[in-house]
Image 1 (cartoon, one colour):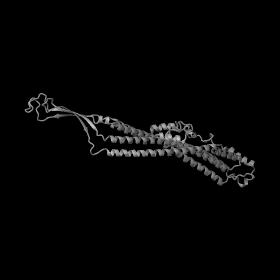
Image 2 (spheres, helix red, strand yellow; image 1 turned 180 degrees about the vertical axis):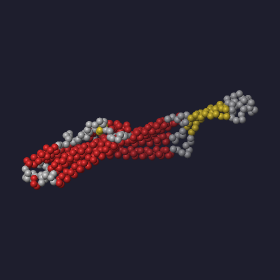
Image 3 (cartoon, helix red, strand yellow; image 1 turned 45 degrees about the vertical axis):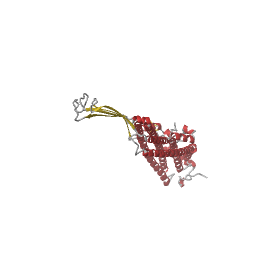
Image 4 (cartoon, helix red, strand yellow; image 1 turned 90 degrees about the vertical axis):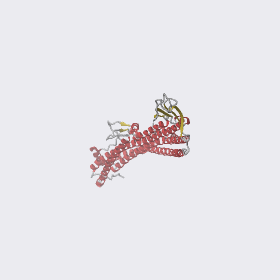
Length: 468
């Protein structure tokens, strides 16, 4: 049965195959040849999304370095560490001795040796110094270990603060990596939208050339609608790209009006990181339980609570301050106050309060911190299992794409184009084949984004860099 194109009106359906080929050749020779899209590597059909530019190339590692240096949240987290370092210095300090110097004056007393009661006095005086010195419980705190326990509490708090800073960096870097992928995805989406627009524009020009002799009004309207849809897609993709670039610039702390970087498109290229090629979920889970900073922070908080309890119980021993006092008003025996040296101890008696509140609070802190550790362990196990499952699924999806689906869509588009050139396939079939080709590649870019996001999520779940 003779193949008849639905584009031909009834009066041309009897035209011979040779005549149809001549009509197609005439249209194509007018400069409207449907050249295949830009040459693309096997697998990812990525157009040139990064033309020659004077802007610097920003790789993902470069972005991470800039982020670590400029991130406001990391600066705040580091300030918390600095505050904990100050608390450690305070807890480790030895109290400075307290010194009191005073001057005494005696009224109604004659120091000239003519006092009627005291008799002659050569070294009598009406004024005299008083000196008092206290060690402020320094020696007692050192001997009883109170200072060491307070330092242990502060040291555990400092370690927990460092882990909380590292945990904040872990979460924020995942956000940056994801945003970097978002910009790359938006750039590639814009490129495919422009490619689709270019194809639709050529189809519209060819359709107008063939109208009304070979295509009718309804078919031309469909081609025009396809062209307008492509225009809309380019506008939407351009807006999405500008928004994603603005979000990435914010994370990088960049305040320039225009996005100043070209990103590295090879970041999206599919590869299996060497650390994941042979890693088993049990190994990743063991690493996560050892390295996750949030879990380590909770463990340091348990250590801190234990030290607080020991410190509170040690505080039941009263603080004892050593004192030394020297006092004189004159030097003679019969003066008002001969030289006098006094050694003493100063303490408080634990009669009404025995540190019950501090002990109770420390015990509650141990309970809550231990519960946080158990919950964090459960969360780590869940995070690693989910992240590994998502990564494995994303990897298999990309492998299917690269294994057959991309090649099938390309082959379908190329064969349909050859048939269209020969006049055996209608224009609508070619439009559908091209649309399917672009959509398949767009889905492939989404799959690559999902795959690398899964890699980054697995890095966040384990707490280490798996790509290098």
